[in-house]
Length: 130
Image 1 (spheres, rainbow, N blue to C red):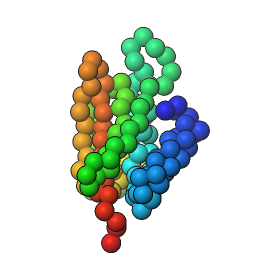
Image 2: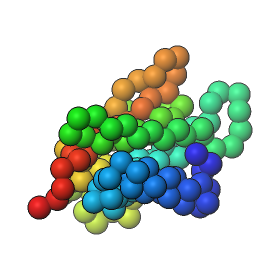
Image 3: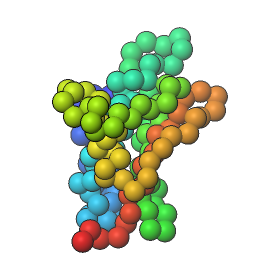
Image 4: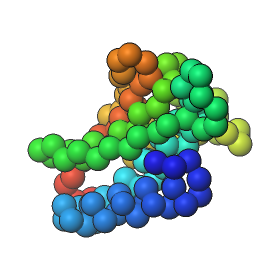
């Protein structure tokens, strides 16, 4: 993903198109918001790979498992995501992204990547909202 306004727009469109192809349009708004928050955090907090200049390389992923849509964002940063409980971040201008991810996903987390970097992921149920 290119870390520009156009790059984010293409990532959102790709997500919506993929969900439409998978007959999961009903998860589109939540999935786009979660993916946008994860990608924004990656761009804001992960530095570019050692020896390079500019913005970090960020990779997005969508996977469909029985009952779940998994959204992933991989970046070169090695620091764990920092989740601030809502009472600590309610009035802050920044720092609420993972709270949104936590509220919209059934479960989320992160895993380190070899040789460096991490992947932050979130699972959304595929069942229709009630």
